[in-house]
Image (cartoon, rainbow, N blue to C red; front, side):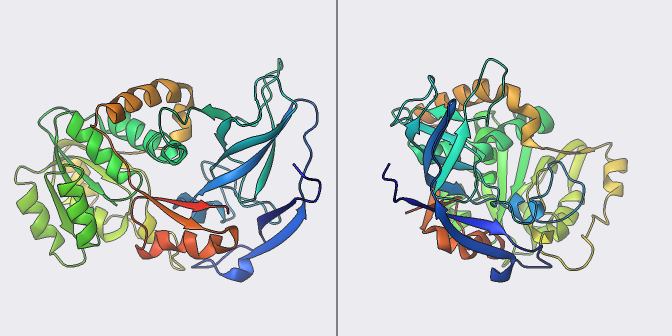
Length: 343
């Protein structure tokens, strides 16, 4: 790599209140790093945009420490090795990891002592690089473990998923169909609903912005709901709880409707339905399943090759467009897995 190359990166400047704004971030350009012994230099191709990013900006206890003020903004990433001082990584190989919103990542490969930045090689002859950020990446893993391990769907049951056309929800619905379930999606756009039914094979999809959600769910799920995979929280979760069956499982993956609140998070007022139906509500954090990622990816890759599992990827461009691209997640403008290509 030429010594004149520079690295543009995004740092967290202040913690947002409500919607993130430009003054919460700084954009800086610094000289690109040079790998020392045991390190590799990766040119970023894709940055993953995920709803969880909003929570990472907040101070306080969570499943992962918050991004510290001044740090490069945390994000899942994919790129190509352009310089290597590590025996296990060759120039030209593609890798995924989490080196943040920047054009170049300086990463430490695994050593005999086990220290590593958890870089993963990916084979782009099996699937495109973007698929390793979607179905074969964190969204797909979240869907796989959240549905199968926590939701535990059985053939013939009814599975409902919110955020149905999103990176996680679309995979949840498809896996549920693979497992022999009736699948009903919830989305906020008719094009997204049509996509879930016509292209992904959902049995129905409810448009919560135009339909009476309670009535539409009763029509789509006449026998009630056995598994609900929740990505949005708020009123939609509350409504679904009125229609769960006995021994239902509610998987709490996210609550995107609440992330930018300046008032307290709205919890479910219908939670007593869990009592009367002897139901269970449980959270899912994908990192808890890291030891089993390889086996899950192998099974999902088989479904992809068999034509049973597909993804939709929306790619925006330019590292300086990071904030407006991230905000698409909270305005419903994204469709499928949202990536930022670092041109």
